[in-house]
Image (cartoon, rainbow, N blue to C red):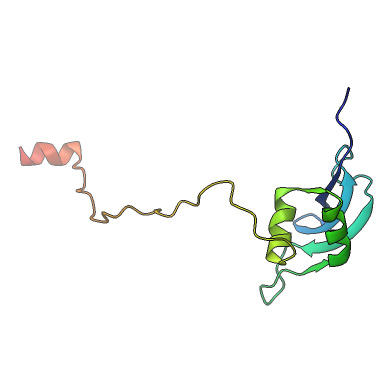
Length: 121
């Protein structure tokens, strides 16, 4: 038989082109991303305002109720709720690449062009 329907907390995309606004909803895991949902739980404005602040409004009690009932969350929702300190920070799925630049920063010798090699020989 098929998988049993479960409740999942996820983001619905609203807004317009290049100006996304997301709505946090509790929905059945079989429904499409922007489809039918069970309850609206908050909004998240992904674009920062003039002061560089991203706005988020959440119904904390309703979110905690769904989590207590066993609702699952998507990765972006986990990140948002951990930033809002509703849930503890979730572990990273991958280790951040700390050593981006090599420790030896000495410049490499430049390669000579074929015409320069002929002049020196």
